[in-house]
Length: 178
Image (cartoon, rainbow, N blue to C red; front, side):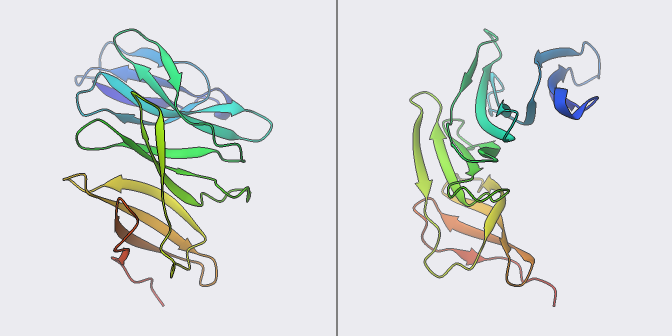
């Protein structure tokens, strides 16, 4: 199945699933759902949903495709909340970006949540990092590292980085254009 976002109205987004032939569309999540990510086994779907319309706060949620039950996995209190959920290759964890300092529109950290226990860990920023915020994250194919896009406000540039799950060995993979 393929998942998509209904963007008919910005304030009323929903997630839809269709088969690979593009037939049999069905809405699986109603309003305020974005950024879907399939679990590798494809029986659960992570996404973000708006929990506070006044502050545009989103949290990572999980849809069980068999039961239709939606469970909220995160509870970041700041504007923007949690965004960009992506499943680990083994389907046991979800990495996501979150606003951890209360700066409006600043996803300042990378977190990992284990859906079955809701245990959450923060991936620390490298001490030498000059990044203002992160704007997306993905897993290495073996699940031992994270790749993410970081923004440096001083130079107004984005760079691609890779680091271990414990936050060590933060490596810049791309150099911004001058």
